[in-house]
Image 1: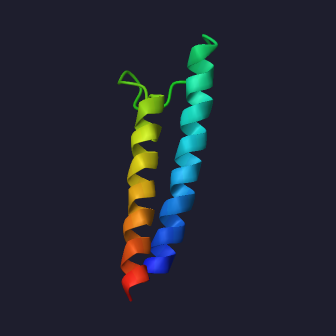
Image 2 (image 1 turned 90 degrees about the horizontal axis):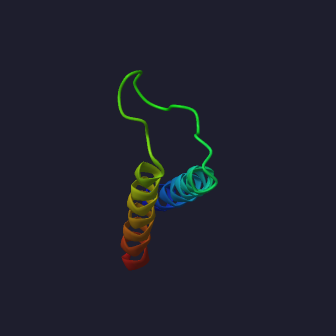
Length: 70
């Protein structure tokens, strides 16, 4: 189970990192990405994906450490 969590966390972290880089590049080139989020609410920024990537990478590391002891 921990190996599956580790692999899933790693790939979700990679996907979140790619989305964060794409949104950051759009912001750097002064291109407004399409509004993502609730209409009339706050848009999802690239920092949301950065925080998600950190969370998923930490999940992968924690799961890997747990399987390494077993």
